[in-house]
Image (spheres, rainbow, N blue to C red):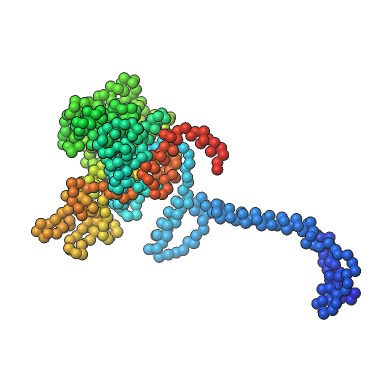
Amino acid sequence: MSSTATNSNNTDHSKLSDVGLIEVQLDSLDSTHNFATSNGGTPRSKTQPDQKNVFKSKVFIIAVSFSSVLMIAMCIGFLVHYEFAGDVSDMETVAYWHVKLPEQQQVWYDRGIDELRLALNRELNRRRAKNVVLFVGDGMGPNTVTAARIYRYKEEGLLSWERFPHMGLLKTYCADKQVPDSFSTATALFGGVKVNYETGGVDANVPLANCTASLNEKNHVQTILNWAQVDGMRTGFVTTTRVTHATPAALYAHVADRRWESEATMPAEALQQGCLDIGRQLVQHATGRQINVIMGGGRQMLVSNVTDSASDPLDTWAGHSTDGRNLIKDWTDYKADQGVSHAVVQNNGELRQLDAQNTDYVLGIFANGHLKYDHERDQSDAGMPSLSNMTIRALEVLGNSDKGYLLVVEAGMIDQAHHRGNARKALSEVIALNEAVQAVQAYLKKKDQLDETLLIVTADHAHSLTINGHPDRGADILGMAGTSKTEGTPYTTLTYGTSYEGFQVDAERMQRKNPALTDTTDWEYTQQAAINTNENLHGGSDVTIHARGAMSYLFHGVHEQSYVAHVISYALRIGRFRDSTIAESLAELMPL
């Protein structure tokens, strides 16, 4: 063997010995073979037995295996980190460049970061709800909300419920109409079933005004109010309309025609067949009798031949009872026979003096017809209460039980103002609802009940209110938007698709009247409209739903309006979810 080959062999041996980790020597023949081949020579024949191959060493195999497992674990760790740990819980852990921008850009970047911070810190409240407060803005479609926001807070502001963490959209069509009425939509909201136009508490097997079909109990739709009562919860509703009007009536009545608020508007045939009007169902039927808090207007439907006045007029278009009834007295007598604490209140003073802590049932009837618009209210003791006043007093009564409560609050005069084309009144009523939502949140926070209460704000349907043209930012929402390029006549920012006295023509010019010649901010101003009819008609758009508190994350997309009742039922574990306690406990012990 050449000296060069020998040195090479010694060198390789020396290197491996220095490592001291693998006890193996390179085959000298292999070294000679490599050297000879590289120099064009012929390798010597193998004279020594093969030494153990390093790549077949147990230590090497263990090392490689361990490294492979470690690499796989690191890869999985990275995936988990970016897929799950990347869902940070606060903005402080998210790096972003603090770039100095021109003022007109910086303000929007800063607002974007603020909104992103709120989104990143949003938490899902998965606890079972103990209480539910459901606010319904009657006729409060998306354009009404936007206009009211601008009216009160300008473009940059938000209404109280627009700060809730969860929201969605509700499809408002009913069983037989693209554009619904309040009775059918309220039945969907409260009963979880879509029904026919102008019917309530009965399913789509009951045609409008069909008394016979409505008497069949198989066609009756039960509601969240009934489900809550079966489970021992306290229940109540507050409205600025008559307590027998469409929205509240859907909570407790089963009627084939929303107009049947008293016997005066029912056909003789329906009376002969045994159908009861809505007023009697409120006081005489089981669900109505068990309601702990009833507040609103509608005395003319509960008591016959009531006297009207300038401060408390009758709703003449709705009819009024004349059969000699006094359902307020009947309600009082029934509660006395039951031996339960109760009170009847009929004005601001009586409501303020109510001993809520020691009262189990309250009947508050504050007007012959609907309550006054909020801006028209007499705030003295003799006057009518605000929506906020009624709602807080209702919560005080309902809170006297450990079993929780369900309260429905309707801002019904939004719809009434829209029907008459008075946009300013409608927007003012939205602001009154906003104040009620703020008051409830403050009350629940003080009671430490916010996290255990599901708060919902939605609408039953929209109206045909539109926001037009290109008015300047900061302009009065009740003012002018621009001038028509075809007729040269100014037009207002707010108009309606259909209207009562809204199709306004200048007889001399045979053109649309110039609204700039009128005070469009006046409370009685009627917005112009494309089509004139007997009243403003409803709109068919989706409406928003906003939620916070227990189970509020269940509102998350575009839903059927009937979905709301099922969410409330699940959140409270009432109705068909009331027997799921065992399953719920198991789910908590063994989460998926």
